[in-house]
Image (tube, rainbow, N blue to C red; front, top):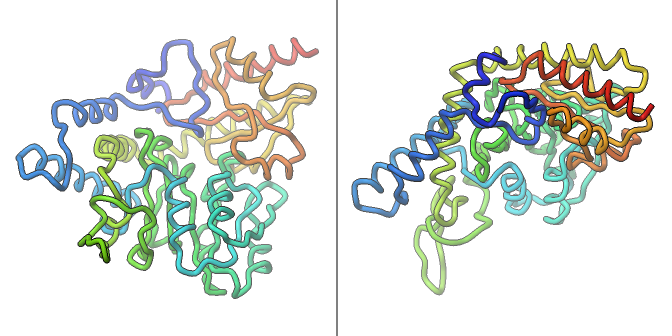
Length: 385
């Protein structure tokens, strides 16, 4: 882990400390090779061609679906390929037959807020515990039979705080609501078994899982209950000018030519991650998070956000220094972090800051990255006095 894996990632050039994996993960050579082969040597469209290469690509594409479904312990007909978690959440928000009240939490990413608003849902907000976790006790008190959906992040993209998904499912189902989970920050580091979690929808993006951009997954064992939300080729059964009938799920949600190359790349990413082991990845990142939090806690100028149990993410602020200035100065030292509101403006307002600095780890991160960041922050302190 860490240094031993960096050689697999050509984007991690010597002397560069990449601590922005929560935004997007670097890609291992295995994923790059899979996408290059799919785009070049093996390329053809899927599902429509009668020639051999098209048939082979169709088999590879559907094999990728099975592989990715297996990664979250799902059946292959329960996952739809989408452009990312954002599209997955929009799909549910617009297609759900029982639009009503949705309970979100204070820490949600904008992609788990704005789609519900645009689709006409009435939004209620669940507060956080003192250490920055979703307060499920408060959720239980807030939920009513009018709520048809609860939508929470499995792991916060700002605070790294994990959610007790199984308990959240029990709380939602008690009032007849369904539970959608944004799993973007969870699937790269936590084992996910959707049946064991008890949620109704699970969404994640490929590019945070060391895979390509432009592809994500929506899982549900209720996909057949949702009408299609985009029309076009592939998602149909029969089309006339008078009436169109639709293919069964998940095909009905994959209008047009799919992200063939990206699906094969994501399957390669799943292979890569599972060969290492999610438990090992999480333990490695937990060690780095603990080390960084411990060192930052010694600095009087630094305020840490989120729980000690943060999964792979450390957000912080420095007194008298805007996070953008922190990020710029760190970049001069070859340290790449995120600085801003992280598409979580309501959370920033709750924390009482305009933005935070965020360091986020991946399986390729190591102790040198932590050291470089801490040394870079010492330079920030010297500059701003």
